[in-house]
Image (cartoon, rainbow, N blue to C red; front, side, top):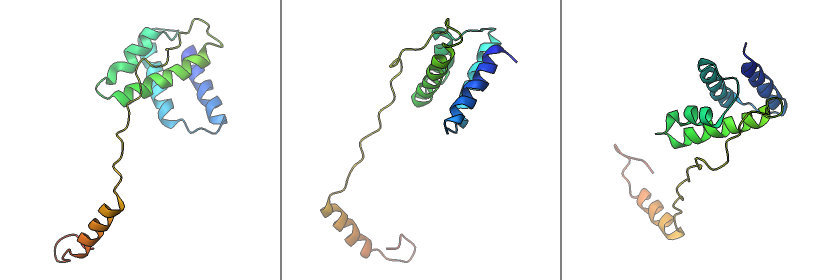
Length: 126
């Protein structure tokens, strides 16, 4: 087992000790560690983190999650491996959610009245 994989195990155990589940984060970080091992890298660098994190560039939320996971793990690693580079915040901002539409009271009343007029035969029943 590589040094980085052992560090990941300790990191996950520590975070779980705080009551976190970490299932998806552990999977993503395990994939990142495998990526590092494949490249024979022993230290987390920004270039490695970006290369792996941006593999899902078409899925911006996924890339942002990946980079956030690596950033937290890298912060943890700096304690035992000072050469570890921690990605700066904001490289890939979190996508913004669209603002929900809120119906007015008048629109809700119209909708409810229209539902009362629906026929129950083969359509939506009130």
